[in-house]
Length: 190
Length: 213
Image (cartoon, rainbow over all chains, first blue to last red; front, side):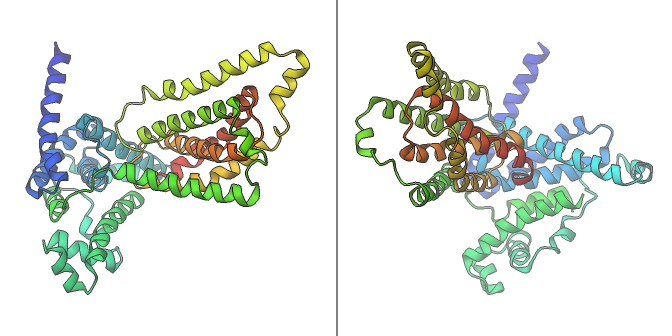
């Protein structure tokens, strides 16, 4: 009975997310925005259950997973349950994170880190410790400027191209590669 | 950065995603990788000298059927492993079917032959170069398939690397079978497979490093 209820809930949330993602992939920006909003709540719940002893890491990992899902959104197969796809990506990022952490703790003294972090456990949920804007500053200009103009200031491709003196296709490629490079920076920084 | 700000940043100007990206990447990879393997084969080995005669032989076509269906099966495996959350339940069966067919045929051929013939059927004339040449021809395909996977999102990197290697080995074998004079099922079921397993092992070894995202 419990299981039936769980499956029911999962199907309902799958349906809801799917109805936002599919138009989003077809270019409907407001549907895509709503999808990402729903998705961040879904990811937060999913990761909280799995990082019970590291509550401070949850939001960083929510953001890392959001970026990963955005960057790989072309790999969603419309015939496949959406939550299976989302959970596979979130789990992949979770395992990668735990592996990185383990490596780091082998090098550092684990006690130092635990004292520093476990104090601020249950503060603002939506505030990550890592600042993506700072990481953005490390990207080369041909990737950083398109992201700043298009994704942060909300300019069109044509406007961003005019402002930077890059071609429109170079702007698009810059955004695409820049977001991937950002994901790689997160991965290698932690 | 707050998560809401990240959401807003990702959504702004996101635009439409071109559909069939997986198919496009794989078509390109197999096309270019296969062309590279064919070029290598033409330069280093050349087609078998009796190619026109071979086209008339049923066993030549049985070999082609095995190699083609095994290539399709490993493409299926690679496609499933390139994207997150897809079930792998069918992969062992799909890969196993062409193998079971060639081993069944090999068993029948060996049972019908006498002891002296059996050794010849198994070793052929080229057993000592065949696996090596298949592995060599699979190199350009391996590079191309890894490129295809890097633009997608494999989550089981070791398995995905192995699948990339197997697909590369299978395409390499397809190209090799234009050169190879062997046509007996016992030979193909063992030495061809061994050749394909070389890039598979390399893929499993390098997968976690090459495919991480």
